[in-house]
Length: 512
Image (tube, rainbow, N blue to C red; front, top):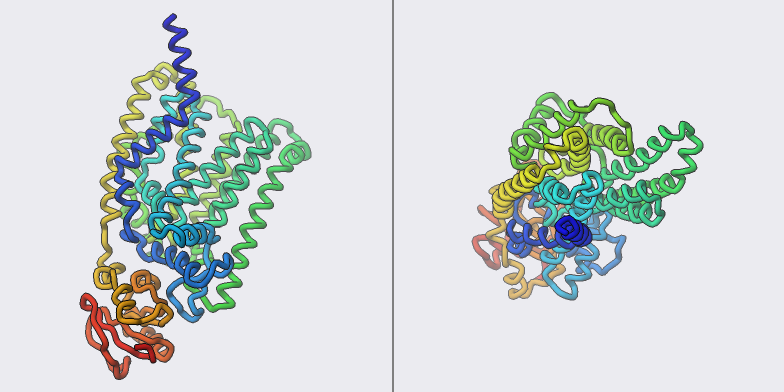
């Protein structure tokens, strides 16, 4: 009788485990204060890239909704036209916020929604590999408890959505390998396609999936022809992904060349282009500056311990499908690390591409421990320990997230306090939205204009380059906003017409 009730309860639990996961995930978000963060303007690490993203949204709203005509507030030499990743997130945000307003909330919600779907599919992946629900809940929340993963899941950068799409792509790819249903393959292709459209470097993942499918079948059939025939559809899907991704990046590169835009990175930033001092500084940044944001230290130690003990306890390596994934994905991320090494110094979100490999490595080495020492690792006390560790890691992330979402950069956000609200002030003075403005000194391309809501140019400092930029853009500008100091001789005779929170406004052109 007791066994029957227990078995019935188990079946109910398994049938509704997905709903339970989403319920717990919502509670986790509330615990992490996402309900507060979702209302914030751009703030914290990568303020520049956050305002760049929102400038794409504003460009659509101010210049019509031509999907393939993208740009930002910063005019440069391109009249604002610039392209970077596939702009689907910006376009959807622009369209929805034109109806409902609050583009910041909408953008964050879209990113969080896609990330949450990815976290759910991570949970399903863990279930698939470990085949034990209590462990699946504990390990899922442990793996997603990284400060970096959580921070970008609710941000204006496309990396959180990209990561979520990648996890979804992996889930359906694994289901395809298990069940060989064509619909799962095309779901996987679709998710991987959008992920790589947002970040081309995530092409590593569909390549690893298709490579693993092929080599696993090759190892069983011992025939290249049979393995190719069996995986003709996966290869077709991979070719389609590559074709569409490179089609977009070719369009973006040509678009930037036509309009003279050089702002956004569309090239590699490899290891071999750095000198020894730059390489050392990058390693310091990765291991010292960012290490505390990857995971709660004890969680890292436990995962590292699982990997080491799991590998050491292997008696005979069974090269199954998952081992092929680890092998090919490991090669892929190693190449990625070399080609984009320079970016790791100041862009912690570039590390997110390594996370799926870490997830698979932890789960597969732990799977080995489950089979070798089931009495220890299948015991409910161990599952409880993983859940407790996940909670401690999430609590650690809570404090780190609070720091990130309230950290104001003294360099890049130094003008935010002065410029916040200035768009209303300018409108009240009868200054139309189509005027062109120079802001000096201002360290960011789009940061100041996010508040001004008018396009123009920023001058960082009046060194030789700054003076030449000022000389080039003064004849085209209508107004100058001086955020600190007094006018210089390079600015010529100026007509001061107002002041807002210490930022002085000067008229250069015909507008009153």
